[in-house]
Length: 481
Image 1 (cartoon, rainbow, N blue to C red):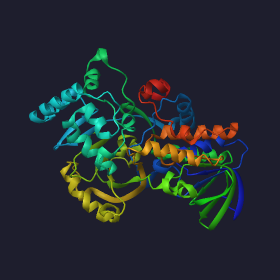
Image 2: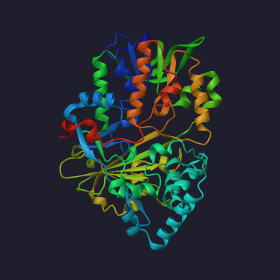
Image 3: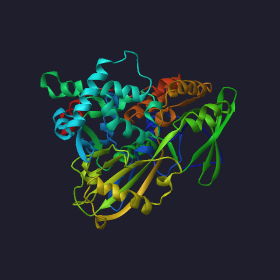
Image 4: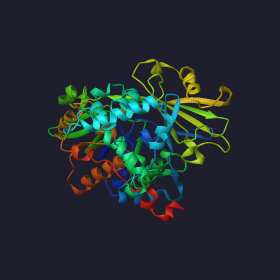
């Protein structure tokens, strides 16, 4: 990294997560001087993989699956034999029982207490009979119209409030169709009847691609390739603000390891949190307050024993538990833990400054140990070799009822700077997958090279296809082998 106190670049990219690296990937080898500013020591953003003593932990339930064939081809060419084919198996922990996910009718009937099953079925029929044809404007309205009040109150409502920290009646419904599949029980029945089976919804494609050494390996490899193409990756460098001249950003002010820097730029592509970016624009301070994120803390346990869970991950639906999801990393790749042993990751959504946020790693493990025992994980304290946590302060953009309109106004404000664009999960304030973030970056870079930047709203609107073929049939038999 060749940092000068005052330097110039053709393109400055803020953030080396999937969206920022996607833009750098497309610009590599173009002849333009491209500088990527990343505040963390490592690239990958929320897709980083943390390695300790032979154990590897992602930051969440990552997998690579996409309906974007050109992107898929590009990723498979880059990774080659380092991409494995894996199968997702999920379940929900509820009422002291475990339910298959996606839902299966036989499983529900066999495991729900009879009175609960009868109440759930009755409320579902009632919701379908009285369904309002107008689009729902809250998550609560969306969920109850599709699942009925009983199932909403049993699982969807409590789990959603736990993850987002906001009552579902205040949350927008806009992200639900991207993240929750099998929209109602009729879909479950269709899935069970062979003649009526549709392709699985986007979030339930069972087969997926996964890098051998964790999701972070993909983005580390992209970073290596962009560096080979002449892109400069400045790690440990945080953007502090802009200098403007009329309708253009003239320079980016940076806090670097060796002191303050100033980088003049022809174009600035930002994947920084939208609230931060708005704070750097004098007219954006008022809008910035409307965008907040839900932090997540990941407690990683290195174990001295073998398999822990029968599934890739287990959703924890009940309010009494702070944990939102349990995951076993080596269910994605056997190389995520040393031979013969396993590991466990506990996702804990929380509020800034609460007890989860303030606890040290030992204190966090102590707080969650009773939950692990109640959830029948079967791990003893003596089987925990070591534990550490990783923080994601901007894990989930909180989509409230007014968010869509505010986001449109905020991104339009960003675009008043004709050489500035904002996109990605944090920059576009969209709850999207990594494939969509990569595509946003590629499209932004194509605009730079073509001399016509897409609008920030256009970039932020890119999303993963809701319905998708299984990865094996998309990729072809060669990768599957």
